[in-house]
Length: 195
Image 1 (cartoon, rainbow, N blue to C red):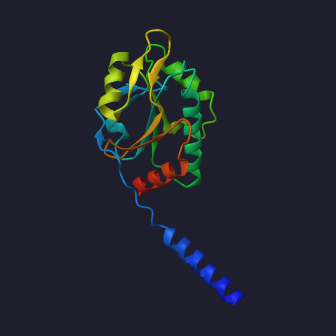
Image 2 (image 1 turned 90 degrees about the vertical axis):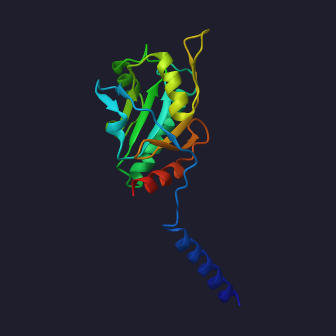
Image 3 (image 1 turned 120 degrees about the horizontal axis):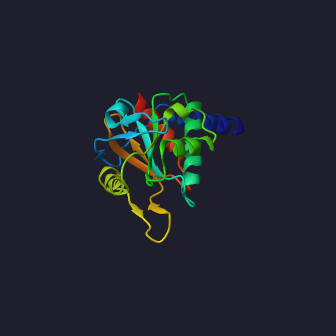
């Protein structure tokens, strides 16, 4: 009786594992078209919406003077990138829009990125080269995200989400980028969108 029970449990476990393999189906939760743009990255090169099309990308809003959520967000994104590499995902970009463009020149953004253990910085596009007012409306229209200058400090209020943008330039999902980052889900979603 004991052997039959063990075999039955083993078969149930095996069938569950086999059923789970390859059965992940990506479900979009949002559908917001990203406005056309062309900004300057940390290497002083132009990055546009058109240049990003054809592959999925992860977006976030950060700034280098941030004394709260930006450092953990950037660190968490390096973790996501490591997991993407471990899973063999190659066709993607990570796009960080500076919410403090007056301070965040390309050189400042380049130095900021160097302070993190980035496994492949060619995948990172840290963008600047626009006015503060512009990024506030761009974040709202293209990502349904809040960006607001704090008049009482040198800080900028912004959301801590990571946004998944599909190969057509449409935001399809967002995730917590600061605390409970669902790295496995992000990687599974990226894998689904790169197939």
